[in-house]
Image (cartoon, rainbow, N blue to C red; front, side, top):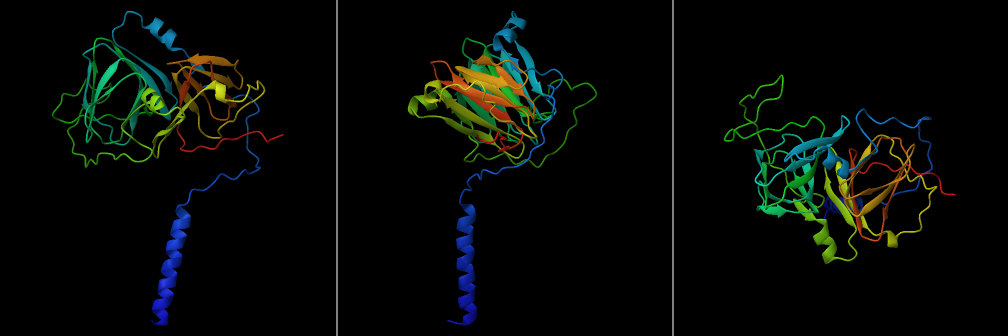
Length: 310
C-alpha cells in the first residue's frame, strides 16, 4: 500500500472517529458566571397577567357558542383560546413560515394534516402542524371543543385557491400567488399527535418530554406527581431566563407557581401562567393527582440562570 494511500485512510479513520465523537450528546457544565439582572422586577407586557384562570374566561364568555381569547401576544409568541360548538369547521389552510400547535382542553376534534391519516384529538391531546403543511379541523360529537393554540406573533395564514378565504383583514386584500411549498416533516422532537393521558396510562413512569422544537420556539411536556418531589422550600426562587419569556398551560392537575414580585398561586387545568424574561420563577407539581404543565419558550433550550449552591 502506498504511503499516500495509507495517510489518506488514516485521515479518513480519524475523521470518522471525530464524527462519532462530535455526535455524542454534550453534558451541561456547571459554570460560575456574572449575569445582568434588573434591580427592579421586570414589568409585564401590556395586557399580560401572571395568571389567567380558565374559569374566569368561561364566565366572561358565558352564553357564547363560539369565542376566542388571546392570552399571550408579546411580540414573539402568541397563545390563544378557541371555543367552538359541534359542527364547526376550520377549513383547509397553512402557515408559510411558522409552525402551529394546539392543546385540546375539552371536546373532540377531527384533525386532517397533509401527509397524515386523519385522527381524533380529545382532552389531553397535543397536535403539531409544521409550516407549509395544509390542515383542517372539525369539532365533532355533541359537545363544544376548546383548544389552546400557539404560534409566532404576526404569523400569516394562507389558503389554497380551491377554498374560499375569509374576509380580508383591515388594510389588506387577498392576492392570487404561487408558492413553492414544501410540507414540513416530523422528526424525533416533532410528532403530529400525542395524548398525555394515553401516554401516562401506558407508562407509570411517564414524565413527558419535547413535543415540538424548531428554529423559532419549543414546547416541553412536564408530567409528574408531587409525591415524587422533595418537600416544598418556600425560599426557592427557581431560575430565570436572560432573554426569553416563558408561559405555561396547565394541562392536568394543579401546578404551584412562585414568581418574583407576585404571591405564589396554584393554577388548575386550563389556566395559563406567564413570566417575563429576567424574572425569578419556581414551579412544581402539587396535589394528590398527577399534574402536567406545557412549558413554552421562544428560545430553544434557553439557559436556566440559577442562584449559586450554598
